[in-house]
Length: 303
Length: 296
Image (tube, each protein chain N blue to C red):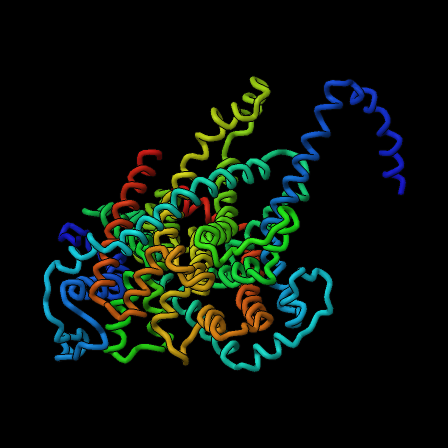
């Protein structure tokens, strides 16, 4: 990536960060790639020696692309991949729409004091530690004494097994994700809304009575960069989503909430099949790079 | 005392105007809907947090009652027990050390890189920028596996250092992303003036770039601190006991037959509260940061 055409001063400014990220980011990736070409089970391999005392060499047999080919017919891997994308296409639109509604509420004139309170409150879910969000979810959706279940039975008259039922566990995790990230969408979109020049918005409101006309013609164009940014960040975050699910359901019941990160973690650290897990991780990396490149290109076109 | 009376006497005057049917009906109704909707937003955001905090003050009986107790006799017992289990306090210390160090280190590495990306022209600049940002998108599980084996080999497992280093992978991109945008907004004329004064490019960066980009740097530091404080996966995989961070300890309660919910929630509150108070104090910068980092 580095070329001689770097002017030297730029090189000195950039080099420390690049070297640091190469060491902590790229070296492990290369190691993962090597592992994915071997038959590597951590409990069964032995250290043969090291390169410069840093880079370990194990006596794992070399199998080429076999681990990757195995993934294609690995039903549980494909299911986890599908589940992750299902989670993405269900939650992203919900968060985007609810976030837009909240942003419009904050933008509307009147009730200033309450709007300030709401704006401050929106920061709370975002700042909550993800693992703790999982803990809260597990408490609130508990089958025996959960508060959500209590309200549900008040309204609908019967109890529901939130975390024991596969479909509902998926819903519960989604609800906690929406709780945490809808406020993020709302705040980003609200900031975009404040950039609409006041006189344009006023003029538009004189033209039409219908708020959705104003939204569609005036406000949405200003919100587009914000929306694209949300798409990028939320997609990346959902692809790597781990903490909330790990604490709330551990991927269960069965594998109903086992998204990619949870799945790879199970294969790599609970089943100790490092080579398979590495191959899965590399595939995941390729997917997230391709998606983020597509998104980043989209943003560039917008601006 | 005089002014309220005055305004009260003035008030009846506009009323005949408002009594005009069209305006009278139009005005108050959406306001009340707006009011209710805002209250819903506030409840939505606050309720889970409120439920965690109140649960941490309940005894086991109140916690496990099938009809949730909204009124109860608060007890500090959960906190005393959670704190006496030493590792909670130690883990909070670990979290603080790791988050501060990695934020500081990212600042040192990230701001010069951001400055170069914003100011200097060189080949493959855009590729380099892409590469920095892509680091932010990589799932931790991809790096956690190999990093675990490499760190084990170097006998670095279970030390704060290994967390400080691996957290650079998502913190340096934050600094690069937000700060390069800030540096770009500094007028070029200032650089030219400084060059005439005899400053070199590092001097310009130090004397002009850094101070003027301070808001962006602060925002990046806030984000970097919060992300590091909240991180679970790397900490779970790379630490055992000595260097455990707070989120790891919080999840370690989740085993066994009868869960000590009160202590779990007390621990959760202790982990979350510092960050939430901090975020509320800096909420204005935080929201501005969202637009800075997110929109560009």
